[in-house]
Structure formats: structure tokens, C-alpha cells
Length: 340
Image (cartoon, rainbow, N blue to C red; front, side):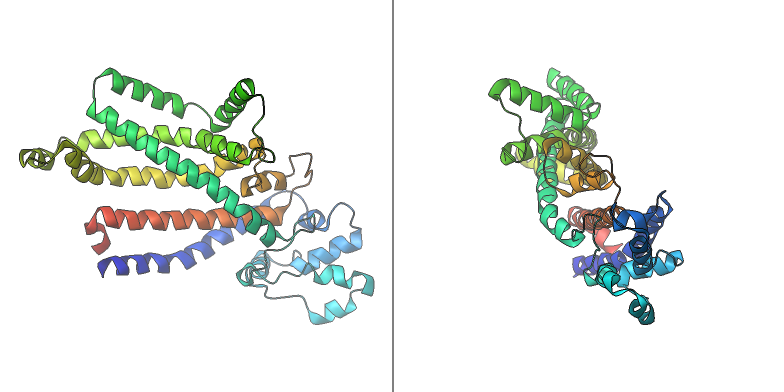
């Protein structure tokens, strides 16, 4: 019952938190240089169409009105104004009127594509990559950290610590490129998603997870060394428990709280690293869409503020949900937390 109340309290915090964060996100995008109406209308749009897009999105209104129109589609354009739009532009104009993200309308990119549909197609790919990278980081990080703590002062400890430092100093995109070159030299092909989707995902996830493996390994080693010196560990050994039970049931479980904290802090970095690796490996995920939406690639030479805004919102929601999961794990590992 205590666990259920704990989860409900956390769930009630999420909606107002997302509202506040989304407003600051909207404000940051609004302050970016450039004319969003021109970007949304497209390079082939004439001045009349640009002005219609500005009116449709309410870009001529105060910032709070623009935010409300983006969020819930209210206040919408004046019906009398819609009637005065020339017939040849009316369909173009009405197609840009946002219904609000809370109603499932995320708007359209300057390529006239549905942003909601693009996210629906790409989100599973990004989640597959990040979850696989997280599993690699957790599995390898915990293993290396526990072994290093149990073998403190030995060559195994030194090798693990050196490897962790090397992993922390190695950018994931650099490791991804090196792995591509190794695969090319050994197997004779470049692991791009279109031709080798499984290889691309595995290599990108390994490159993404390497940095986080190092962080988790260092924290696990430090936390396990602290815990294994406690009195209850000696008591468990005196009772005759197996070393495996002492390490996993009493040692690791009590060392997990700082490790979970590190995991939660790594999640935004996972999404950020996934963006670059998706572009390098040609993986059609949300990260690649984000890079293309900034206008820095030949395929998309113009920035797309609405796409960037919506993608940041999705990443923000995923991060908040990850923090909720971490809170639940905290409460599971340490029951005292759920009653605070």
C-alpha cells in the first residue's frame, strides 16, 4: 500500500512539471534567430503564404498565446479572418492551423510531412537503440565494478579502473567510427542500417553503451567497496551464507542507490549520443530526425523549429518517465524512501 501511494504521488507531480518545462522549452525555441513562418512555409512559398502561416500559428501574437495555441489549439484564428483568406490560399492556410499537441496534432514540418507520423515511425528505433545500449552499460558496468571491488589492489582492479578511465575519455561517436572501420577491414562492408540493420544497431548500441559502462563500473566499484566493509556483511558471512549470496543479496542490493542515480543521470546523455550515432550509422531514429531538422545537413538545409520543439518535448517526456522509474527503483531497493 505504501508503494502504491508513493507511485501515485510521483505521478501527480508529472503533469504540472511537464507544463512548466514545455513552456520554457517553447520560450527557448521562440528566442532562436530566424523567421519560423518562413521556415514552416517552405522555400517555395510566396510572401502571402508566409504571412498566412504566421497568422495560422499565431506567430504575430504574444508568446503566451502562441504557447496555448501550440499546446491546446486555443485561441484559434478568427473565423472571420478565415473567410477573408483568398480561395486559392484557403486550403493551404487551414492545413497549418494547429489543433494542439494535447489533441495529438504536433504540426507539420516544412517538408509538409506529419510530425506525429514521423515520430511514430522513428521512436521505436531510438528506444531500441537506447535500451540496448543501457542494457550493455548496466550488464558490463555492474560486472566490471563488482569484480574490481572484490579484487581490490590486484591486476584485475587496475585493468578495470584503467579501462573505465579510457571509456570515459572516449567519445561514443569516435568509437562508432572506429568500429565501422574495423568491420570494414575485417568483413569488407560498412554497417549502414539500410543494408545491415542488425549490425548497425548492435555497433551503435555498443559504442553508445561504452561510455556509460565506464561510469557505472566506477560507481559500482566505489559503492561496493563502501558496502562490503559494513558490519552486516561480516555478520552475513559469520552466519554461513555463501559468498554469492553475501555479494548479490546483501552487498549489491545496498550499493544500488548511488548506482541508480548514475543511471538516471545517463539517460539524457544516452538520447544525445544516440542522435549522433544514428546519423553516423544511417539509423532512421528520432536523433537523426533531430539533426536533419537543425538545417545542418545537405538533405535538410533549412531548420525546422516545430519539429525541433516537438522532438525536444518527446525526449523531455522520456527523461521524466525515466526519473519516475528511478524513483520506483529507489523505493524498491530502500523501503524507507517510500514512507518519507
